Image (cartoon, rainbow, N blue to C red):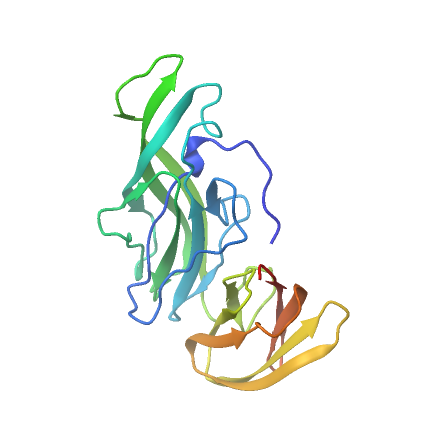
Length: 257
């Protein structure tokens, strides 16, 4: 995934949520190092399908100071607090971890929107948060909350007859994620299947050689496959999941050992 290059405002700082489903928990994606939330609203988030589990993973990076967010003012970011999430479709929730919704400066976090959508449409999701900072230049002032900010996402929920996935194709496999990515040991292949079906898994190297194959007995909803990449050389690989009607492919980076 290509990282968006842009000047970051405080509107890029927040962390949220895990799934209300007990088997799912968000994961920090180490490929993101710039302050912000990834994917951001410009990159967009995955669409969902009526009556099937929805899952969108995010990685957040909260800076330790204000050099990237309020130049030329210098200061320390003490914390960020999520104060509200509105606009999610019925059946989909966002829950903070920790439950206080308070995140220290200089940390990474993750969040998930998850649940079972019960209505179709395009939903404008607003995440409101407040950053607490101590300014030190040109003068030192007491810690104070900066003005509240809101980040806006567009979430599309379609019915099963017209589902459009994040690649703008009609997909039988949707929301394919690889977490963490890059990885040096274990990584998780997570995807959503609209029905119980056989899915063909394959791993390719950069020149197209097939390194691993496996037939997956997938259930309707969220499925996960643990993949050990510790014996692979550092480099770029491709994960492919196929059904009788379509193939979805994502890039996997092995490295960091």
